[in-house]
Every structure is written in structure tokens, then in C-alpha cells.
Amino acid sequence: MNGRDTGLQIFSAGIFKNNPILVQILGICSTLAVTNSLRNTLVMSIALIFVCAFSSGMVSLLRKLIPGRVRMMAEIMIISTGVILVDILLQAKMPEISKQLGPYVGLIITNCIVMGRCEAFALSNPPHLAALDGIGSGIGYSLVLIAIAFIREPLGSGTLWGFQIMPGWWQNWAIMVMAPGAFFVMAVLIWIIKSFHHGEECACSK
Image (cartoon, rainbow, N blue to C red; front, side):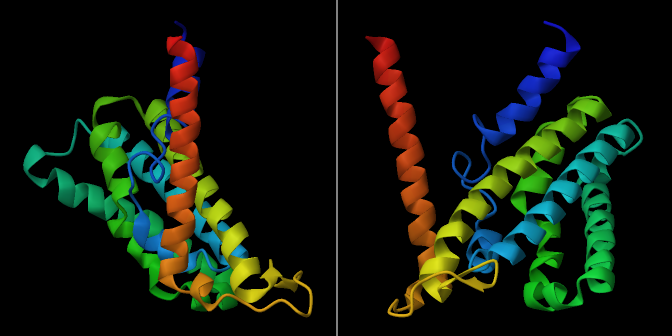
């Protein structure tokens, strides 16, 4: 197996096989918080992809220099640096969205996905593979969040990307702009994905 094949497998694992939300059930806080708006969800997703890739790459690059007793403190400092860069950029370029996201950008620091990839992969792999792993996990996370937002925003607000798309007679579902709506949509997506994989396994076993 060559390096390109290995990199592709590492990248795709975070999207499909080890999807942070659908498989590992991580990062639920932001799933509930931002997915009532597709625009906010996309911005949060891009932010997390960057932070995950940046953090994994930097942790891998410095892994031989970080003493074991302060390993997690160093990882948090690296993650915090990435989050601060994203937050400053959002405040400067997208102040309205930055206000809407509020503290949730800062909470990326404590997101289990970012810390988990640093601990599980970046500490034992070279920087380029660690960055690929971070990007893959971030994209896998983002695709699920975008799918949830694509359902929640029209049903809850009658809009998509801020534009009215539902007919005048449509009655918005209040539950879809609240946390229970996100839980419900996420549970349905997990059920669909699990059923699909179970069907494939049954077909392969015959």
C-alpha cells in the first residue's frame, strides 16, 4: 500500500467509517446549538475543520517535544490558538454571524472531536497524515451538521439560507428551532445510516 492510498483511507475514515457524530456520537453540543440555521452551520463547520486540521498537525509536529505530564495542557493551548484565530477572523469579517454564534465558537476548544483526534491519532502519526485525519473528521462532522440544518431551518423557520422557501400557509414547527428538534433529526439520520449499513452487511453475508 503506498502513501497516497494510506492518506486517502485516513481522510475517508473520518467521513464514513468513523464519522464523529453518526458513529462516535461526539460533538453533540454544537449539533444542538447551531443547526437551526444553515448559514451559521456552514460557518461553524468550516471553523471546526480548520481547528481540527490545525490542531492535529501542530500536535503531531510537536509530539516529540511535549513532555508527557503536560501533554493535554499543551494540546488545549494549541487548540485554543486555532480557535482564537477563527474567532478574530469571524469578528473582523462576519460580525453578524459572530454575534449569532456567540460562545459556541469558543466551545470548539472543548469539542471532543478535536481533542479526540489529537489524542487518538496525531500523537502517533506524522503531521501530514494527522492533518488529513483532522480534515476528514471535520468534514464528516460538517456533513451531518449541514444535513440537520437543511431539515431544521425550513421546518422551523420556513427559510433556507435566510430566504423564505415555504408557502404562505406553512405553519413553522417551533420544536425545530429548539434543541429537541436537533435531537430528533439527528436520531433519524443515525437510524437511517445504521439501517443502511445493516442491510449491506446482511447482503454481504449471504
